[in-house]
Length: 130
Image (cartoon, rainbow, N blue to C red):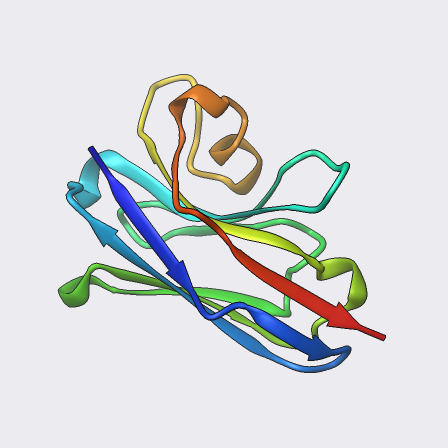
């Protein structure tokens, strides 16, 4: 079973930056979609970015141009660099792994479409003040 451990959240003022990390344990990269999603209190979870095993990425419109996903395959670590943060980015951020299946892509919305298919970490809080 995949295990994910996030770190790097915190509080920052609008316009600032944070870098999230996710240690990924016990998975086969070619059989999973990876990425990040977030959930604010009282809101639905939102797929932030998805990445396929070939490196192709898909970002939510709300973060395009500001967030960048990267990975260190040698260390099985996923990163999310978040720049130009806005108060509306405030949420709990989760690293996610989802097995590849024929009916869903690795794009950000599909990554979190079926909760029962997701492996996620404990989350890390990001708070952006205005």
